[in-house]
Amino acid sequence: MAIVDTSSNNTAIQDLFNSKVKDATANNNGLAGAAKAATGNQSLGKDAFLQLLVTQLKNQNPLSPQDNGAFVAQLAQFSSLEGINTLNDSVNNISTNFSSSQALQASSLVGRSVITQTDKAMVDTSKSLNGSVAVTSAVGNVTVKVTDKDGKLVKTIDLGAQSAGKADFIWDGKNDAGETVAAGTYTFNASTKTDKGDSVALRTSLPATVTSVTLGQNGGEMMLNLAGGMGSIKLSQIQIIGT
Image 1 (tube, one colour):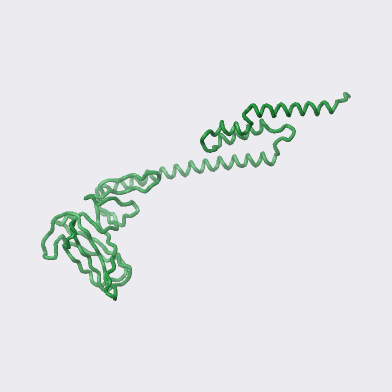
Image 2: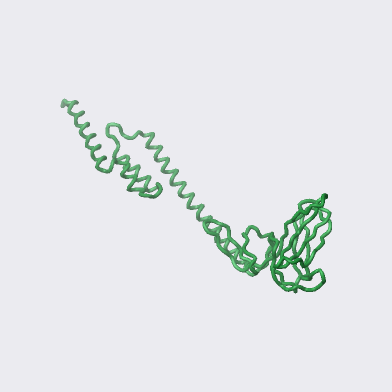
């Protein structure tokens, strides 16, 4: 049996270690170089993470190799990262499909009448306009005052005493003198009075015709553009869809 000089073995191991350290330095300090090459200016992804892990193994200290527990922990992190990326892709696909479905639903509303919470409406006075007032609690009297685009009072609709809920009203397109007024944009101001005689404004819901749809940007909600310069409303603000 040959006798081995252990002192020379120690020297060989130390030389091997020094060689590995030199190689790691030449490789732009090992992991730091790999991180820069793999990620650049982007966030760390699964491919870059795997590249860093391989580089770490290649440049580990031969006298103190990677601990098994730490290596398993890094593999678990890589598995978690893979799962998160897969989940993110799935959520993005669901979001895209939902947006497409919402766009199809919204486009079907073009040309149709919808009811939304507003105080203005484009009125064809040859027809009756149906609206409603949101009454928060039982009141003794509710009135709706109709004014034209110049702010001139055209009609006062007396709804009388109302309980809490929705109070419907109809305007036949005529003024207080019984004359049919011109078609156009009108404002409907609903109010009631307290026991002390103070006036309290109430919210009204009126019909409008959808002319086009604006798709939401960056995850924003779709907007419905209304006829007669009535502006836009969110899809979620629709209360009733008519014909």
